[in-house]
Image (cartoon, rainbow, N blue to C red; front, side, top):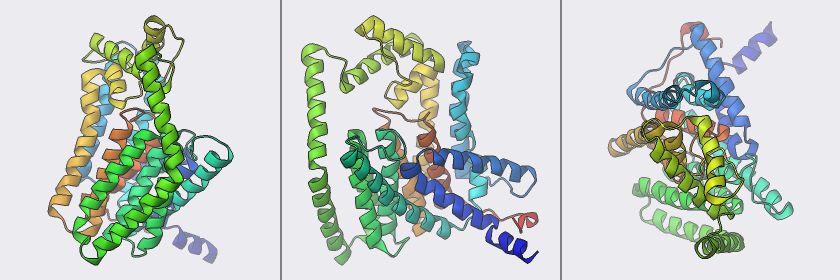
Length: 421
């Protein structure tokens, strides 16, 4: 009996949330799809807790606005299939939408955690993730001779989630959420090197822009000695990245220029750049045919395959158009694209409001999470996947849930019946 009581004390709802949060922020770059299983499992557990009244829905205005935006996007995708009479063919492709629909459930359970505790978990778990990402990148790039994919199995996905971890370390160090700023800066450097090893050029750009924005958000603390120290640190980080990443950057730049030359002089669409250009041409043509509701999800795959055969004489097929908004425009038309944009607009608006009126470091850190997420996903989605990938979707929800809660949410008290978990 005493042993059972001890177990219950160690596995209170707050403790479970702590362990859950650690895994969600550590796993995306290092363990890949583990974040999907953990996040979905946690959301299903939240459904059960809400059903037995051990949790209550935590409904506040920022959370409600985000929920409406997410659900509008899911509705637009389903409506497109109904209009095109492809509901049965598209049904299997609706499964990723479930991850997005979990948002209000996860928010209600995650918000029982103290904000200060959650913010420190985000920072420290991201720090561990950056070091883990570097270890995997070194093995994959230098020992196996491949682009670093971490635990994600895809270089762009790995770079995207690693970029978020890097920004959390940088934001944690600058905001004062974690006083031990030196390990955080070192972790940010480790994550940045891992991203360079991924060879994902678009995420290099996202990392640069997101990093500048994080510095601007925390500019009030960068005065006097702090500004000089930051300048020296930034210079040191730049030199390390240049020394380690220069051969990789040159190699990837050479590939880009070579692909560009082949496309312009020979009309060669078989290269990485050529295939993307071909996909964009096919996608834009398909969008013009059905601009309002799109063609449905399954039909877009057939359109890609047929387009490659008819326009380029190639037998190729992809699951997306290597541009997040173009993919949605083909699948669900203008309505789908506007709904998808709405998710990021709401996140950015929630963050901007907090950054404009609040001086609370926890709230500003949460707003920074939202801003970094919007920047990373939108830039990464220009040449890759925006939503529809299990790791990216789960990580997006993790950051939107926690960022919204930390920025402007209210803590949810536990019902008395759940006091023992």
